[in-house]
Image: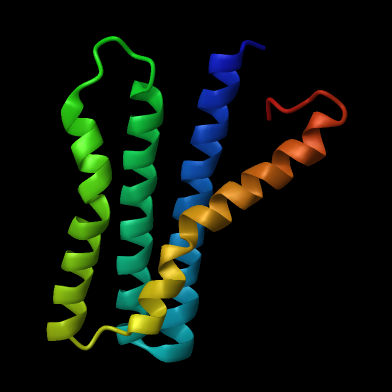
Length: 129
């Protein structure tokens, strides 16, 4: 299998894992702590997914002759945008800050699951599942 196809499949698995972590986490948090915590978790998950998407765009544009300078500016400003939006939402609503932080780890958890998947299936060469 070529490298581009392998990478595309890995990214696809990461997106699926992020969605499953977000949906499962929101349901679990809602059942345990209520809507304020579920809303915070979902907000954190959405920020995590958006950040992952932006990182993927920057990574694919590196080395590209048609790369736009605005991507570099967006990369630098993403934390200001995400942090400012999160602060405003949390300051003026009753959403749980702790749940938001747990939701922020959705992309990290999905990448760790992909690493484990690759380690398990790379041994016998059947990674393309």
